[in-house]
Image 1 (cartoon, rainbow, N blue to C red):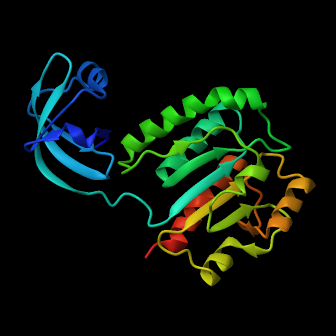
Image 2 (cartoon, rainbow, N blue to C red):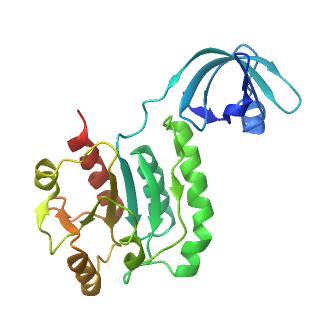
Length: 241
């Protein structure tokens, strides 16, 4: 069941009254009194509720159960990615959200298929996709799509480790690297994935100069959107208990 986000200030005396998503819930989903509803606040507290009243512009629910959501990774997974054309990029944003990404950094690379102006105009749309995907997969927190950046700037961020997925110029298979260097709880991990045309020689030099790990996803050549899903999925698999 998809859940909906509320603010903790809406919680009073074992009831929650909120107006967020009112039109969608009442007009589109035809919510009725007596139905159950999952709600999540900004602290990651999930509430199992039952609708007691639908007012003219708000919904009132009674809390039946509440608990801290476990639907977040134990480390921060950040994705720096060179945006693709619409359908492929929308898929990446949706799946990255499902896979627990904390932030998405759209990176304008040398071989990027979109112009900087187009990327900037798409940021708001990608953020909306993240919100909707978070509801569908019961994320405890909504990830953030940051403003467009460059490879040079994003690698200077406050990360504990950075992994760049490369078809060529690789140092290790991802599996071997992670098993030799396990990700610890609370770590901030940045994953970098390039465009369909791959990284330029100049960008490979940035990885080398900064000591960034260049990992492979195997012998197969993957499309960029496939690489995002496979790469993030393998990181989660290797760090799961």
